[in-house]
Length: 195
Picture 1: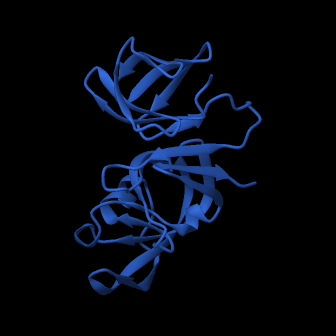
Picture 2 (picture 1 turned 60 degrees about the vertical axis):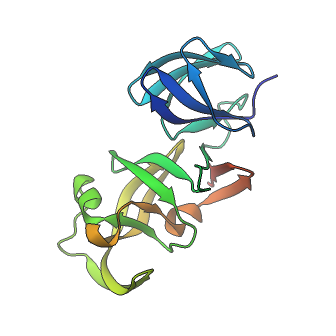
């Protein structure tokens, strides 16, 4: 029987931390099999798995729904870490980013260094007041050309950019999340793209 969701949560040398269905993530070595999923190879931040007779290449932080037809809606599947937080690899304008999912953030929120690396123009960006855990501050309000998380790609997504000292990690906020259907089951969060 095919697993419902498969995601890659991390790579440890020649091993990968893989979550299958609703079971806790499991460390698998090349050649190991679990619930009909076999780990074929680990190449840096990518792994090759075989499921249902098909080979797939997945990046750390990405997942898919097994048995889904090619016409099915684009999705991203994440598994919570030990503190119950959801992290996911993604891209902004083609530049790699590791997001922390934050439903309490109105917009995608980026450290300045991440925004600059992704080619986000800040010169003419409007300054807006923001409330953070550390009090009131200000940030640049911008529009991101493309944001990709798993199989979900959205264009023209609102975001704010803060100084690195104020924000250590990029936040995947509601400006992205509200354009998906979120399904939270146990330790798994699935985002399905709306059309």
